[in-house]
Image 1 (cartoon, one colour):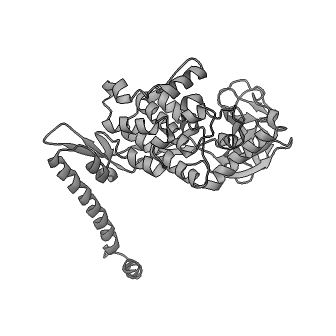
Image 2 (cartoon, helix red, strand yellow):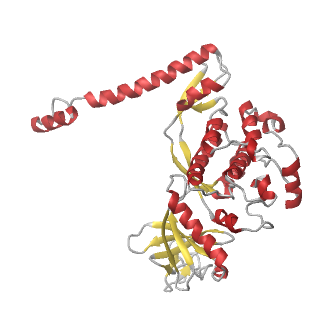
Image 3 (cartoon, helix red, strand yellow):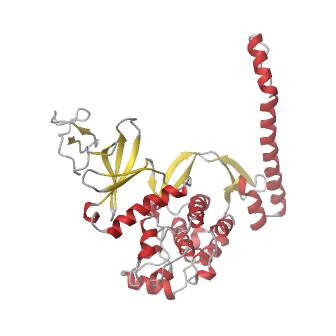
Length: 392
């Protein structure tokens, strides 16, 4: 097989230039590209990690695109790494949550390297969004973090703690917008406006490898990524679900500010800050962002050094998140906003009536759909059939 370095297409060895862009063809940069693993033809490299590579692949019989993760050959004879790789596949496949990447198949290559097959997604990692677009609007950050928390709640129900949450392990798929946003305005004649979001971020959590490593590590081994690691993990203690809650606090902080709460030149210096220094609250550190006060309250609790002082479940955390909305929020969250946010009484009444009218409008639209009759100019037999259908 030959490879076009510009369009990344693969070709059989019967040409010298790419027929699409005229670039000279070269050998593939990865020896597995163009090869088959099981029923999957590997087409391109999507990503590289410490444990292996993820390829874009096509099922040779049904033609559907998938992502295939292959363990690095250097680890195939190390039982610990193979078990960690297998656990990652089993954990994601077992939970079956819409915000966790779907695992569809598993197998071994011809040279006895394990691989597993995932749904193929087009989008970007959260780390890339933060790099190019932070600070994110509060409502967008809340939406992303709520989906992550929902997925983790399902993990914790299965007694699986992720242990390595970070923006690189959170993938975002852009979807068509479907929800209504309420914008509060400093205008007495028009105190709010409504609009529908153009797009929204669907979250997919990746990489459960450290979840297994944390189960088998020794006391002098630290599992995780230092910047997002809970203090107890930095001490070498195996974390529980509240370690994931701490990591979510760090990620929320970074989405809203574009900065990490703690940074240092070395891991040891970073751990000293995490263990002994108070969290620099974003509202105080970045006053120009004008973050809602509830954000500081949320961050301070989620990132408490003592796990007992954090949110004690993902459900509790998600409820606290819904109090963090500022001047822009989803219409479905109006009851929470009205309950927890300082809103003028006159505006409170308007928003409450908006919420009630929205429910009435939706009910009436459904009712209209049920009672609508077919137009009179239809063929009589078809009209009778449709009338019978509507009555049902």
